[in-house]
Length: 266
Image (cartoon, rainbow, N blue to C red):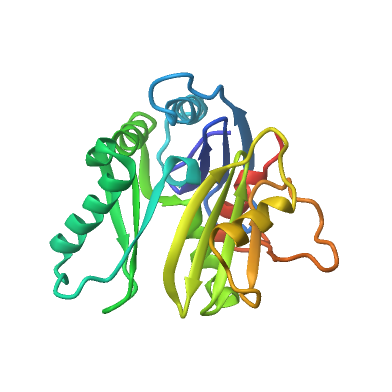
């Protein structure tokens, strides 16, 4: 189908796949088109490059009419760090400098080339630093220009899930976000950031031991609610007595559908 000026495109980018959907002009809950595009994981170079190339090829194959583009990034393309509150450091520039120092001490010199965003939580509270390769954002802006699209938003999968399920999570919770090849764990205590960690999920795929491992690694109290959002579609049905509860994105809003994109069939 051709992309028109008012068409909305949402794309989920992961190392081995790009999933996308198009909403035609006018209001519609269901997309007019969906696509699932496999891509070989990068053996060297930028790990995001195959996904960007796949999205460019898919959008470029359509008639050159304008559209808006929203991109959701796999947590494997994002680096997170919880930044403790530091008395006297309140200006945005100072906070960003503190966050960059934290990322550099955690991930090395590569952090100096990352684009940084802070998810602030208010005075006296820890903040969450989110960083992506600056070259990835430049590539997405370049792609949008090539296919005559307007890049409206680039969001990490974790942040999209947190915003969508914030009410369900409450003040104390552990949110697990499962996607193909990765599990992201975010811990909130008293509504404040405690920890965020992304771990690889190997060839064995999903099993409940992954949840138990995160509970042990982060030393979660026995009464802390643990929620799993399965963005991969790979988790087995919840069994009685499981150590977690499940969250579901029912595609009724653009945010819900964006979350569900990672689970489009191969």
